[in-house]
Amino acid sequence: MRALLLLLASFWLAIAEAAPRAVVLYGYYEYPPFVLPEEFSGGLSPLLAERMGALSGGRFTFTLQMVPRKRISSLLEEPQWRGVVSWANPVWFADERQQRYSWSPALLRDADLVLFRADLPLEWEGPQTLQGRRLGGLLGHRYAELDDWIADGRIAREDVSTLEANVRKLMAGRIDATFIPASAYGWLKRQHPDLPVRSYRSSKPRNAYDRFLFTNPADAELAAYVKALPALLAGDPVWRKRLDELGLEPAPISGSKSP
Image 1: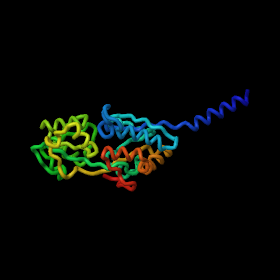
Image 2: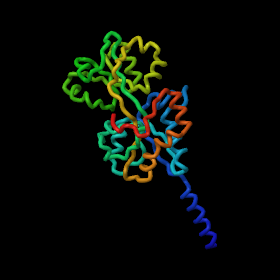
Image 3: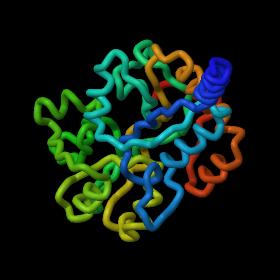
Image 4: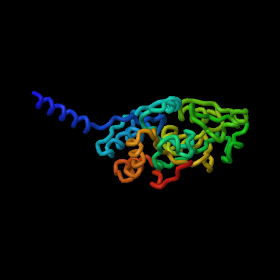
């Protein structure tokens, strides 16, 4: 009996050691191309979670959990927080020197396009372009170079919860300008074919930046995998095919670590 118990114990220990570790992949972009409506398939965030598990060699499984940006901030206040935050940039999380969190190399290249009302064809030259005007913002999002201008009333910021709400407000003339990620602009044009006619797109973007993943540096095993992941995805035909289909530009493996 004792030999049988030892054998069973060894068997279950082997299973436990072989079981992949479950990890949450946090996302807070609830718009295309990161999350697509139900009638579409292949949103980038669900695919990222699937490919992260598939490329881990059986070490991890990842489950996408969509949460508001403010909840991400609350999560990060816990010293022992667990998981991976997706599509972020060090500047947006006050970690420009990448010392607070463990960041991956750049994963995706993006930019913030500036859209004005159709009857207000301005070119973006910085915060002064919006002085005395109404900016459509997103709840929980920070526009660092505009903070002082908004705080002292030189720019009126009106927040909504979705990009589409800002697009509708802009086309209706209820705001003067808004920022749209280049990665989302193509999908928004498909949903609103009159967007290019009922708005003016500045030839100069607000900024260009890379998107990264990050995790808690206290989790050494996960941090090492997150750092290795962009190179693994670059060689993954499933991932590259979907980027091509969505018209997205992967960041070079040695991509810039600042926006």
